[in-house]
Image (cartoon, rainbow, N blue to C red; front, side):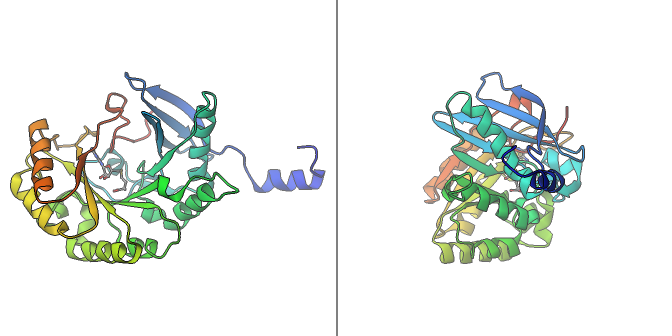
Amino acid sequence: MTNLSKSMRSKLAHESKIAIVNPIAEIKSSDEHTIKTLFALPDGKQIEAVLMKYDKRRTICISTQVGCAMACPFCATGHTGFERNLSVGEIVDQVLYYSRLLAKHNEVVTNVVFMGMGEPFANYVNTWQAIRHLNDSQGFDLGARKMTISTVGLVPAIRRMSHEPEQVGLAVSIHAPIDAIRDTIVPVNKRYPLNILMNACRDYIEMTNRRVTFEYVLMDGVNDNDEHADQLAQLLKGLLCHVNLIPLNPASASLFRRASAERVYAFRDRLQQANIPTTIRLPRGVDIQAGCGQLRAQN
Ligand code: SAH
């Protein structure tokens, strides 16, 4: 940019970077609807992000950390351990990368989900700053409602988010209706057990009047029987919410198995009969390890 002074250019070169996530490998699912990208970061660490094409939607699933400290035993990222938080730029740049990729076909990013590697609420400040830039009308200009954060259930951050002005969607990884089960599959439950988590969600809904999504990964013989469905319906009764059932995707060295399709439908029907709006998340990109819980940055 020769229209800037030399001193300004050298200051910028010294203080800032352009395109800080560098795509080093990319794979497409066999149906071509899902693309997974491996990015190298300036310090050589690696992350993954995913682009999903559903009808007119172009949803990207981005990472907020290198690795993850939450250690959920059914998740591949949880097995890798935590390395570091992503910077604001590293988060935003994943979106810009896909935006440029889509622009070649006259398409745009329509939705951003913070559901890639890491726990977004364990990197709250950078994640929220990234959201501001993405939402800013002089920035990426994506509506806050087009963005969703998924959390393992970090209660102080849920409370903090309820005070934010941006109407970003909240998804909570509930995965079990009672502490005895949740303790074993979501270790952070020992710190924020279900009653404390549900109080925070109730307060969040009251303050924001926004519907919360509860994610529930169905695992064979662990959390998928009728009694679990009834307990979940009881737990969520009267709340402005929606349940998104996720049939477990295979993750590295995981001992857990996906619930049968029959169980998944029965679980949904039972929740719906109890007046809990419930949908099943379609598996996407599982053949390229780009499904939920399969990201682990391997070349
Ligand atoms: N740390 C955030 C984002 C995780 S990824 C969180 O915990 O919510 C988004 C969703 O995928 C979460 O609900 C997560 O529990 C789920 N997930 C993790 N491993 C999975 C697997 N093997 N199969 C299906 N879903 C999985």
